[in-house]
Image (cartoon, rainbow, N blue to C red; front, side):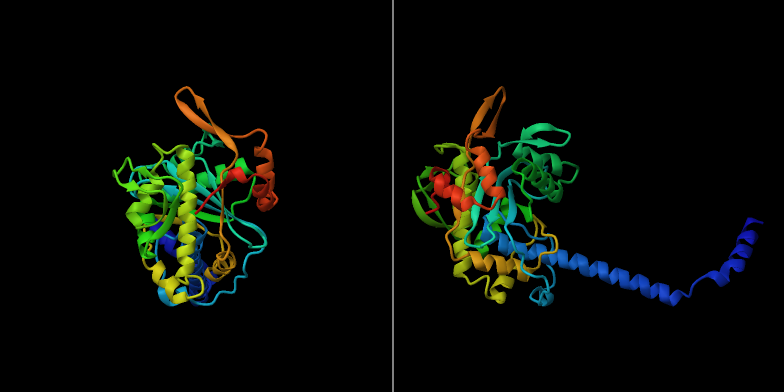
Length: 353
């Protein structure tokens, strides 16, 4: 009886049903638009792989490689104007391991005049506020965000990004996170990176000795240096400075390889990058990011360590901005005046080579 009633109801309203062909066509158009948008986002993430690599040693790319046939296509996106802030997070371990803390957090400030890059190492013990967790160390933000049965690099990055934006009071325009295996692969793909160390040390991880001075490191050695903090004079702060030195060396290496002006070289490099990386690029295109990078690669970058000190607490250590210099540093960063600030406070500048 119920079946007969349903059939009769459908028959009475059948004349109201719109033609199937136009509806099907509309659905197909929506699906195509969404697929194109997802592809553009993946492409933008892949573009950031090289552009952010030029900006810092810790870079960001999309987790999947798009088709190379469209990778080098023209883009209508205009080059971004004004100052930019790119956040790059280096994570120890592999993407499929349990959630880890962020080992290195680097804010790359690109001034509006594109004169040079400022590599701001944010101490991983910097005290920040994490929603629902209260006062925590910055490196914990990634772990809280990525936690779950399957660690999520994207969530970990977003949690770190939000904590950095809150403590610094700046907008994060782009960025991402990558694991150390991805750093190793990137370094080997460009033929090694020259890192200039102010003092030599012996690795506690591999027992390898790294002498003072400039030396070209392969992927394995680069990761070894980036992980080192024990036995260094300033501990974790020296590790942050070494991340800046690696970033500067990677920038110079990409410039030597003509990465930003030769799309074939760019495409070959991107082919080497795949898993262990995530990106947050918005609608920024490959051409737009490349335009920004090309304008900054000719000037030596400036490494900056925020003014502050480590504070010992029962069972933990935190880093707090200096109450005297901290406000002027934040004002300079927010007002795109880091050039003036670093000139006035040369002791906060890292010697990159």
